[in-house]
Figure 1 (cartoon, rainbow, N blue to C red):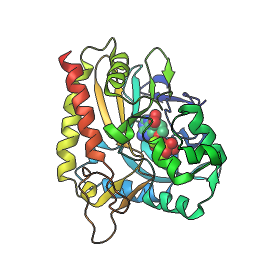
Figure 2 (cartoon, helix red, strand yellow):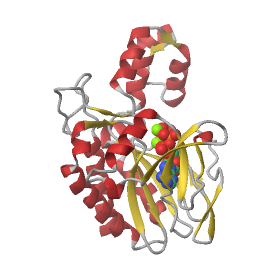
Figure 3 (cartoon, rainbow, N blue to C red):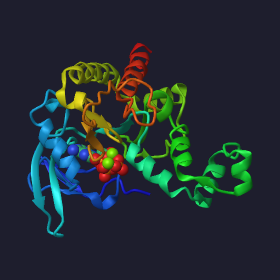
Figure 4 (cartoon, rainbow, N blue to C red):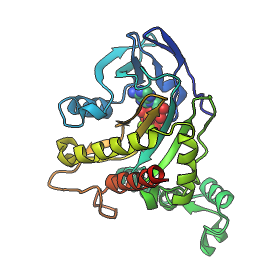
Length: 291
Ligand code: ATP
Ligand code: MG
Ligand code: MG
């Protein structure tokens, strides 16, 4: 279980437990300056955050203040704490895209070619009918097969996003959405997330539309493949906002290639399905808003 409040933050005299909905517990620390947090350095993410400082997407990305050496002698990124300024907020992390691994990671998994008993067992636990007869006989599956299959268990492969975690203002939280797949289930979870905040759905919807319009003109977005990146939803009684976070697996599209973030992914075309996910989210929030 990931600890949701790894440390406390203070902002404008408000003290609040910081919320971490994904990633390793040790990856984040309180920032020295108010309104900042520290995320363990990933060189690729540093490069992206630097470029995003002068991109149209800047208002929708946590402000990046550069690197700092932590007292544990590890290098950290200094980021705007997106929870600062909210009072007792509800928080949700949705991972965007039709796959959450890099093509390179899939290729590496293919090289090994060894059958994995552990992955076969995990697959059986979740869905005993998923392995083929041959896989049942071998009591093993290949890792690439497992990687592709796993994305079909959640809404990732079909809707282009999945819920990673939710924390409500009463402190209740869950990261148990790995099997949340259908639009109906997603609607249920989002309804639960918005419960008690009648104004949030329309604000989120507007913010999603603003992000969508900005992605269209963003040079960064046109030139990058975004894998495992999330939209972070934060609302309280006053406000509701969404930001793009987590660029640890965001890479420039290979030279000479172009992606539109919408075409079906096929090995080699580098499509990430980012806009498929965003459009699904807009659809779901439109339904919620009209409800
Ligand atoms: P993973 O790759 O497993 O998703 P990670 O280590 O790359 O994890 P992030 O996804 O960047 O980390 O962040 C993990 C969680 O930390 C998010 O789900 C969110 O709850 C919180 N978080 C990250 N960045 C910020 C921020 N700038 N402000 C507030 N909360 C943040
Ligand atoms: Mg993440
Ligand atoms: Mg990450």
